[in-house]
Image (cartoon, rainbow, N blue to C red; front, side, top):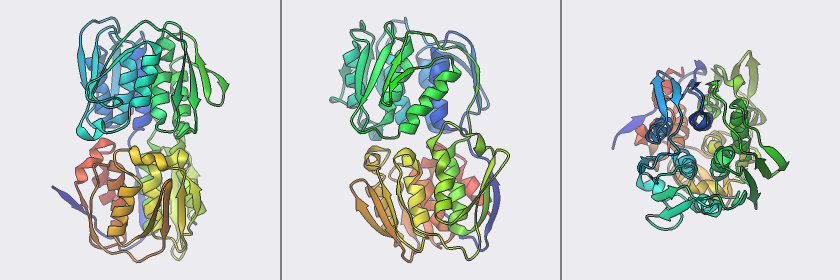
Length: 423
């Protein structure tokens, strides 16, 4: 197994960083473009594995896509009437697996959705059940609610479906993306507690750019009429999740780090992360579309108590920042992240303790107390967000080594080069 040694910095940071496009926004835009009968161009695509898996899957399902640099030109839509059987390997991309499972319910032919072992262990049951309730033919191939699964279109038997909101917002978003292409349209009721609601709003925002809008009957009930996506030129906004790492670096090591274009991130709940750092004592500046975070010399970080339910991907980022605070930090409302690429509560706590952090693991989050850290080798548990977050501590703690560093290719293949430029 390869490893990455992070070199400590000896002076405050001064850097301007360009982050990739949002993989979450990109996934939604690519689905909308593929379901449109009109040409579309989706630009500023990130280069990570998740986006590559989505593009490959859509091409397997019949979309005609010409990829040039960071742009994808759609010249032909999905072959929904094709009777051909297709196998889509989503690798480790949960968003791709879930969204294309929903899309497969529109196809005449059989689609088998599969992926790597880690993805096969992630929960899929609620989405599979909702599609079956709609009339799709859903056949588990390795146990109920897991991948691989076989999906094919069936007669739509209802125009309304309920979906639990407590496991993953991707289930809801997948249904929303296919809803306008169903013969009867679709009403979606989100039952129980709802996690990551900002991602549902993101889905609606991208759909509107492609000419589709839901009627919001209530806060967690939506109605889509049968309609068509309208092709367009769509530029993916910079990824606020990726931006959290260089911004957190300023909080951890001191100095100023700016992220170019982040001010254009209007669809992502994670774009509120700079305000979280401000609560801890950092200074936030917005100049044009650039956003900067500064922690002045001598300015301590203060711990905070925060519900991260709408910024759940950034729990690892905030947790490592919290180790540098002079008072405890409590992160709440994120019990569902145990079912991400890793157990982002248990695995994260374990690796932070390896570095000497004082971390309490709770059912729905973490409590991080001030402590003295030391160098050690940390493991990523096949999770790009653990790798990128834990590496930040190496900026101020000698001897931090990240095992399996290539896992960052899921969302930001150039991450280690970016980290090297932070000076």
